[in-house]
Length: 375
Image 1 (tube, rainbow, N blue to C red):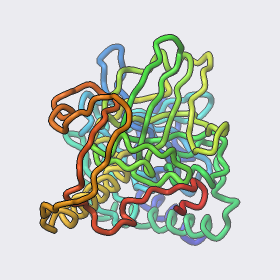
Image 2 (cartoon, rainbow, N blue to C red):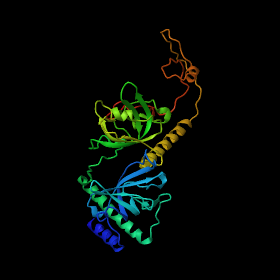
Image 3 (tube, rainbow, N blue to C red):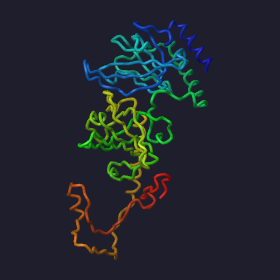
């Protein structure tokens, strides 16, 4: 790791570039950096109402410290397209000082581009992209090699990866993560605002499995099974500031905590005096949604294949000799009545089974024990 850092810094110096520890406030400079954390795009509500991308970056000279880089543009396509580990190249970026630390901000003269954290494939931005020169590719590869060395050290020494910043957790990670507070990115499945209280209930999914889910087949019509659902409660000011959300909306929720009052795994955002909104509505092309959208596509593909498989067998009418008799005086509903009535409720139906799908009864069974998932 030390050799990789020395090689990168010497290479940078040979082309007269500064590392991040050398940049000075009130100047414009060129920067090469590794992206450590990315926040979802946000719309500025005042002034020009630009979109904003905020991220933290580092390089070997900072010895594990980071600085913030903020980008503003009227188009999201013109913001940096990065994820954790991306290599970011900035040209003529402005250096400010905030809380006695350097902070980077783009100007009308700033150009930039980014490279994928795994493949180093370039991810240019519209209208502001910088065309890297051949010798700069050596700098980018050297910085990437240093970051890969850092990652290998973190994997072998888990204590190094503890961060003071809140992690972004997936549903499947919630039960075993040590983080008390965390951020969450998910898709809205259901939204309910309780009028009499400062409380909003959300049903979310990020298409990973909830190990202690609340059994609920209400959303089967939308191809969403209950084992990938997560209940979330917003309280007080966060509930009051929450906009009306619809099925399929994507949200970034900050400062979440687990709810431990029952056997099910749920999360909540408790009320506080902060004016900052802790729920951000994301656009579908936001880079922070990349992993979720990939899981969603895979989930929908599997669901489609299962439906095709279950519908391939022909359904035959069958004559049944078994009949039932109702001993109460309530009237029956017909299937036609139920289909034509848009009101949600309970109906009394008398019918016989023509056929059933899926043929394998195990595909019908829901987990009974929320801990071991055995029926």
